Length: 159
Length: 271
Image 1: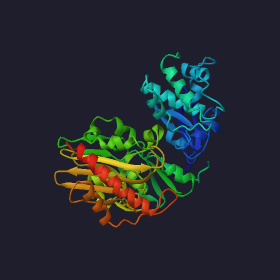
Image 2: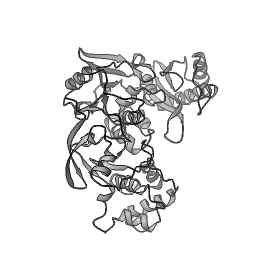
Image 3: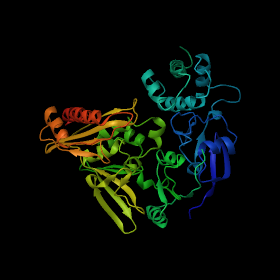
Image 4: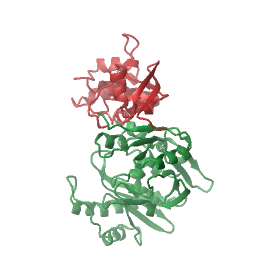
């Protein structure tokens, strides 16, 4: 029977959560408001900016373009899942080293897109990096440093 | 953004999905949601019931028949079309998928969603017309098959009626055929201003032009040279819309140029 709410079980960054959610609730609101995981940002709310990008069952997607109920039974990775306590992963360290964030608003989405890219393609060319972050808008226009950071992370953090 | 309240159901079989779609006039199928969820945010559409097709694994298949026919489930994503070895039997499918928006949208968005939303600027409706695809639609009374020429009925309207579900898209064998897709988009991999899909076979040339009418316009030039193609497009007396992106005159001009380019590339691609 169709219902306006549903109890869902979702694994987020390795933790399992069971919650009742309205069918109309977007995944990004579930993550931010229900689970208090505010690392993923809402930039445009229209599926254009990519700041809300997360990885669901291994697939990069924009969490403002998916309902929370659609994630029932799924495994979600957000930016909070990258660092181990205070220890940054090489990609995050490369963003810092290469000054790949200015205001930082797009950064959580950029990191998730770059994470998905590097899993699929560990040694991407600059063109492939640009194609990989095509769905993420940096309104500071800091793309050059972002591409350099992703390239550096792919080369083990050096370059 | 808060959507209007909506009911949700995730059926476990195609039969159940069709039953749920037929049970409520306001029911809509939810595939990848890359169009539907956004139009719900804008309240341009406010379905009462969302019938989520996520559990229907049988709609995610890509099968290449021994005769070269490709059977694509309606829930096949653009990423699947890009990566599937079977889909390479018709390389144009992956080539066009690569031009859809971005990684995130390609991972979620589906071929069925693209054709069923039938936005006049969508990439796949003209491509399906050029390829001569057929569509299998399931309803309460069983299954029917509709050729591409009869599938696209109007802006956002297709042969899939309320209470029905598109299940399969069948692409005929590409043996001896060459395909190409040309467009002028708004920004790289953006919305098309005009598009043209061409398929050239031993028996003729088919060009379907997108963004110039409510549905793709099929043009069948007598010959594959640029002058014949442009002449055939002119003879179709296109009456495209004018908007902030292009005037009607410019769209007519693009239609001729892109049709000629698409046919030229299709001829080169012909095996």
